[in-house]
Length: 319
Figure 1 (cartoon, rainbow, N blue to C red):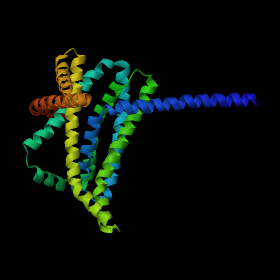
Figure 2: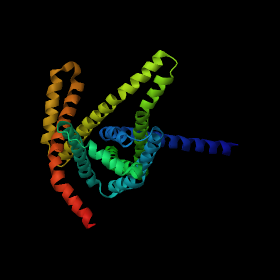
Figure 3: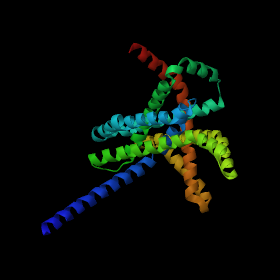
Figure 4: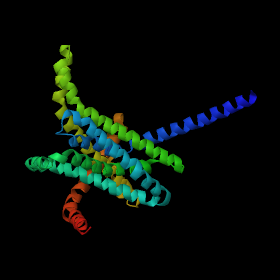
C-alpha cells in the first residue's frame, strides 16, 4: 500500500509539473502573441474581402479552408523555420523583423495612398471575376492563404523575438500555441463578421420582439461601417507596428537617433499633462511610430513599383 501511495505521489508531482509547463506555454504564448497585435488586426481586417460575393452557405466553409491553410502556414512551414533561426541564426531575427516591419509599412501606406489617390478598378475586377467564375472560390482561397503566409511569417517572427530564453521544446510549444491561438482568434472573429449580417437579417425578419427586430436592422445597417472601421484600424495598426519594429531594429544596429528622438518628444508630451502622463507618452510614441511607418511605406511604394516588381516578373519568366 505504501508503494502504491508513493507511486500516486510521484504521478501527482509529474502532473503538477506538466500542468505548470502547460501554464508556462500558454502564458508565454499570450504574452508574446500580444506583441504581434498589428499584424493580427491586419490579418482579421484583410480576410473578409476574400469571402465577399459568395452565397451565404459558402461563407463559413471558405473561412474554414483559409483557416486550415493558415494553420499549415504557421505550424508546418513557419514553425520549423523559426526554430532553425533561433537555434542556428539568432542574429538573423532582427533583420527579418525589420524586413517584415518594412512590408507592414508598405502595405499600410499603399492603403492610405489608394484612399488619397483612388482609381476605379471596379469594372476590371468584375470582368476578372466573371471570367474566372468556375474557379473563383479556389482562386480567392489560394490568394487568401498566400496573403496569410506573409502576415503569419511576420507574426511568428515577432513572437519568436518576444520570447525569453527557453528550451527548444518550450520554444516550439510556445510558438505552436501562440500560432494556434492567434489563428483561432482571427478566423473566429472573421466568421462572426461575415455572418453578422445574416444574423441581423434573421433577427429583423423573425424576431418576436420589436426590440429584437430593431437590433437586427441595426446590425445590418452597421456592418458596412464596421468593415470600414476595421480596415482603418488594421491600416493604423500596420503602420504603428511596422514603424516601431523598424525603429527598434535600427537601434539594435547602432542607429539610436530616430528612436531617441521619438521617445524624447513623447516624454515631453507626457510631462505636459501629468494627470495622464503615461497614457499620453504611449499615445504620442505610437503616433510617431505610425507616422514614421507611413513615411517609410510611401518611400517603398515607388521602389516596389519600379524596382522590386519588374525584377520579380523577370525572375518569374526566367523560372
